[in-house]
Amino acid sequence: MIEIGDKAPEFCLANRNDEEVCLRNFLGRWVILYFYPKDNTQGCTMEAVDFSQNLEGFEEMKAVVIGISPDSPKSHQNFANKHSLEVTLLSDTEHKVLEKYGVWQLRKMYGREYFGVIRSTFIINPEGKTSYIFRKVKVKGHVEEVKRKLKELRGA
Image 1 (cartoon, one colour):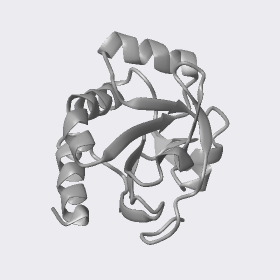
Image 2 (cartoon, rainbow, N blue to C red):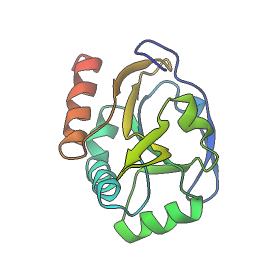
Image 3 (cartoon, helix red, strand yellow):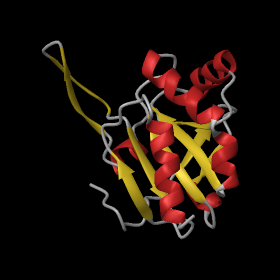
Image 4 (cartoon, helix red, strand yellow):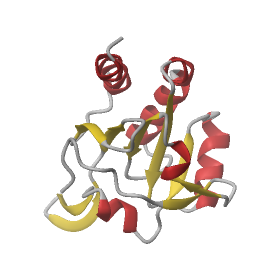
């Protein structure tokens, strides 16, 4: 399990246009890395729309916002188009990055067990270290919470 202060695990994944995006490309900037279960579900849509609507505020703080789910690049493309999303969405269909970050876990719903994404957000500093972790995120108010924490971490 990744802890605060750990180097953020490196990854390269496909975006909605099937272009490779690597974490190392963002060294020197803050990264808001959020993991979500599934495109076009109520909570995930609300979270992605909220991050997109607040993107300018994050950019002013020299931060990039990246969302990762097990959905395909094509699913991300449809999701982004349908909801006018501006955040970077990356596809981890093989769950490798989800596992590296400890967010692919056994879940239970209605007595059924299955593996899925535990909604989580990692704030990664410009040196590539994990500065803060939000685990088991509740969507409502989360983006504001992330902005407050980023301001605090930046000393602003």
